[in-house]
Image (cartoon, rainbow, N blue to C red; front, side, top):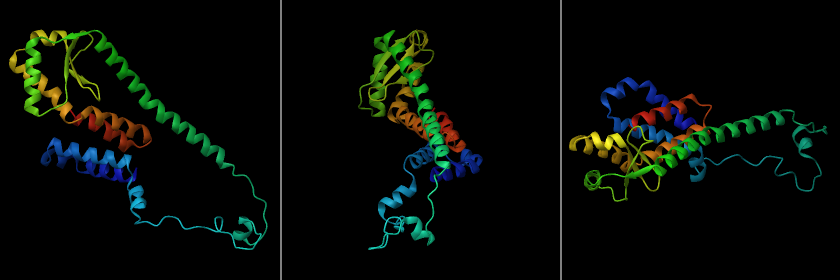
Length: 231
């Protein structure tokens, strides 16, 4: 959490300067780097590479050979009654509450996304031939190899992309009928850029990070900024 927060803090401190001298693509890259550091903390990488040796064995783990002293006697030099840790219950309750919040935050958004996706796909129809030709031309122009479907739905208020593994571009019914060729290409290209940049996958990763670090305001800002920069 610390490594990602440091990057987000630097991003905030240089926000005005970055807006002037850095392109949206570079700022988006910085936010994605912070997101990855939230998912893979630096201290785990250090431990994995062996740079940091980790905690050394204590007397609790390696008692004297041949002795019958308990860990309390080893540490204190005298016999004491081991008292129960009254803070263990508090830590357990805090862990349970934190886990529930971590699960509840993404569950609500994922449930809403699945409901919207099912509604749009169920009540949809194939786009016109003109739109399909435009989709194929723009897809080749952007170098997108994955198959992308194009549908129209009355439950869609604005053009959007759905589907993580199999992307689908959803258009409102009125959008299909009222746009000229130039506007048609712009709309399709805007949505296919999201497909090429894997923005939907990045948003879901950001949702996981925000859920794991729900207590960190910098992480919440990072997630909202990723949503804004992806557009």
